Length: 291
Image 1 (cartoon, one colour):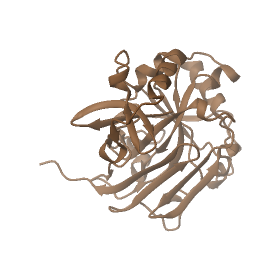
Image 2 (cartoon, rainbow, N blue to C red):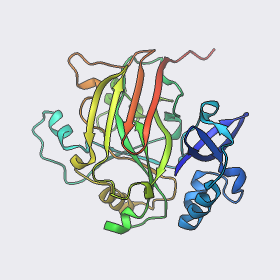
Image 3 (cartoon, one colour):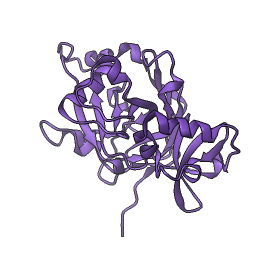
Image 4 (cartoon, rainbow, N blue to C red):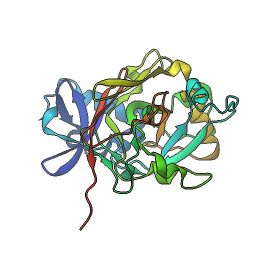
């Protein structure tokens, strides 16, 4: 299933995308108030959703809805830095491959939905793109390993883990400022549930295009820390809950790595495509000063 959170008629709703239509599952399954609530209900809840979708007629055309984040207000977004092996070499610092993943966190307001504008902030012209595969947690997880860790993944979505490059260097040991400007990144368009990946997650492809030009392209075969390990590692020090999101890292080719750097400008179109999921598309807009 493709699970979606969206706006229609001035209200927030959630449902399932089938073809070019949206089936309103919130109306059909009133016991579940959101996509997160559905995921928290486990396989029994997902089975109810599949049954509700079977033979249903779309309530809205996909073109008539406004996309919210697939998890409308994610409780936590964990981001993994430098996780593709080629990216470690991209830093040209001679460092060995890391023993453990690098982690930072983002707030929900730093992301826009599919089709919503990415904001170039008033304070910087160094808005950059980072195409990523994001995994969504579907069950409570603490100190899980191997197949148990994989079973905690509810599904997969696309992410542009956008970055304000000069602001990530304001301090010596953190990147939080440059990773949390409002609407500097995006998530969507929807979550594709894990059952749609019968071959697993070992060869998913992520690519990023700016104005139609491919800038990034790699597969999860080249991850240093795969999905199962990330769920295991994070669940060692914190309890993961349904609806938590893990951004699994970006390939080489971000704008900062060009000479000279190629930062995003107002009017640029950024597309992140993940195999088996679809395309997340956003247009860059200059932020307007608040009067």
